[in-house]
Length: 437
Image 1 (cartoon, rainbow, N blue to C red):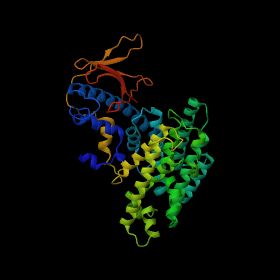
Image 2: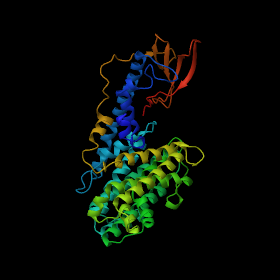
Image 3: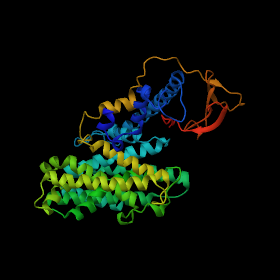
Image 4: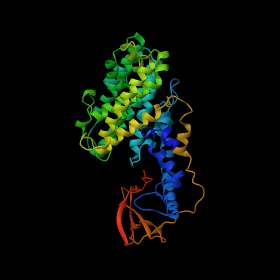
C-alpha cells in the first residue's frame, strides 16, 4: 500500500512492475482467499512465479546484450566522451526497455535509445558548449543534410545523426519498400531548430510569451522525435500521411505527448535554469501574472498537466478518438510515462545516482524469490514443431503457450475447473503479463 501511494501508476515502468509482482507474489490476486474469477493453489502459484522469473531473466539477457551494443555505438561515434554535458547511455536504454510490456523488436528499442542519447548530447551542446556562430553552422549543415566543413563536436554530432537516419531509413525500406529518409531528416531539422531558438533567447535575454515559449519548447523536449520514427516499425505501421513533420499537423495524442513532458521537465528544472539564464514556463507564467509566486505557477502547471494527462489517456486507451494504430498510441503513452518517471518528484534524469538501483533491477540483477525447484518442461506430441506444456495433476491445470511470432508469449489456453461441472477451454491473460521480447 505504501508503494502504491508513493508512486502513481503513470510514473511506473512495466518491466519493473513485473518484477515487483514476482517478488511479492504472495500478495497477488491469484492467492487463495482473494475474490477472483478462479483460485489457484500455492503450488500452482509457485509454478507461475517460476515461469515469470524465467521470462524476466530471458529479457534481462537480451537487454544486457543490447546495452553492450549501444555502448559500442556511442564509442564508435564519439558520443560517450564529448568532454561536456551528461553521459546518459544507460538511462536512455533503461527508459525504453523498461517502459514497454509488448514484445517490440530489438531495433525499435535501439532506435529510441540512440535517438535519446543524441538528443541529450546535442541539447547539452546547444546549452553549454557552443557559440552562437558554431550553432548556426551546425544548423545550416543539418538543414542541407551535408556535414562538409564541420569539425570537432559539431562533426561528431552530425555524423552520428546521419548514421542513425540512414540506418533507420534502410531498415524501413527493407521492411516496407518505402523511403522515409526525407521524413526523418525533417523531424530532426525541426528539433535542432528549436534548440537554436532557445539558445538565441538565452544568449540575448529575450523573454517570450508563454504561448510563444510552448510552441518552441514542446518541440525542443523532443518526445515526438523519439515516438514518431519508432512508430513506423510497429506491427501496424503508421502511414506517412499520419505522421507529418510539421508540428501544427501532428495528431492530438502527439501534441499531448510533447506538452506534458515539457511541463514536467520545467517544474523540476526551473531552479537550475534560473542559474543558467534559460527560459522556463514556471518563470514566464509569473511574468505574465505579476501577483503569482513560484507556488502559484507550479500549481497552475500541475493542474494543466493533470488535465492534459487525462486527455492523453483517453486518446491512448479508447478507440475512436485517434486514427493512429493502437500500437502507436500505446507507444505515445509509454513515452509520457517515462517522462513522468524521470520528473515525478525530482529531476532524476540529471542525477548521477538516483536511477542506478532501478537500472540494476531492470537489466542486471535477477528477481529475488527465494528458493524453488526448477520448472519441468514436458514436450508434447506435436511432431517436429515441438511445443512445451506444464502439467499440474493435482487440479488438472494444463497450460500451453500460444505461439506468437516465434518466442513471444502473451497468453495461455488453459483447462480450468469451473464449479463442479468439469472443465472449459478458455483464453486468459496472465496477471504477470508474460511477453518474450
